[in-house]
Length: 277
Image 1 (cartoon, rainbow, N blue to C red):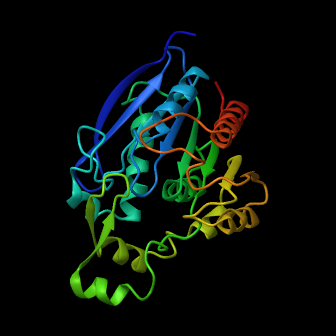
Image 2: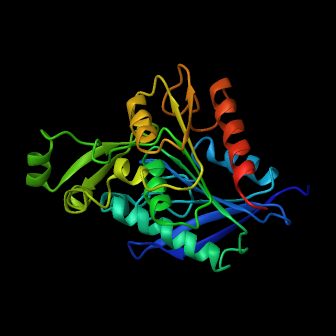
């Protein structure tokens, strides 16, 4: 197989600003895999370039993008758009995924895929579940450390103060940067609870689904994975024993771990089995 190449694309995101993404693929790739990052994540975080390259070398067109509310700007690495982050919502993240999928299927970002799979991490896993529950054209789904419940970013004791001040502060642990989170996400969650119910959506997923979770996840408990599996008994579970939320991977990339190797291998095998070339 020829060495994969990367092309970038720019669409208009759900918030009206730029939605930036990349497609990594070899010339003969037919099936596509769309990857959704998590909260405070971005398409070039830690493992994502490794994941897209591995998928491309396995014969897929790997599509990665930054949610319009990610806060990460044109350089792809820094949170230079804090206001976009602050006004981000779950509903807009879901719309962003729809925008990418429509552009992909219409041939606007380099190919018309024969089949499409979704891979989502953490919050992005929850978004992928919501999309797969409603989109019969999603042919395979893999979630890594997916949240089964949006709204866990805050506790009920935070809401009155959040309402009073109009924002809470979110710290990026890697850079130490403090980002604002306005009440848009809180309003979105309170006004659209049914539409954003990941656990309920799990029961409507018909695509072959691999649920991956670390047993020592410090951000999203293993019980979320068990709850998703209980609603979607046709899915399969892979538990990474002793692994945390990112399976031992940090940013910037400093090498792999046994847990991550297992997760990535299982993901590629799952997508190879279930996506049409």
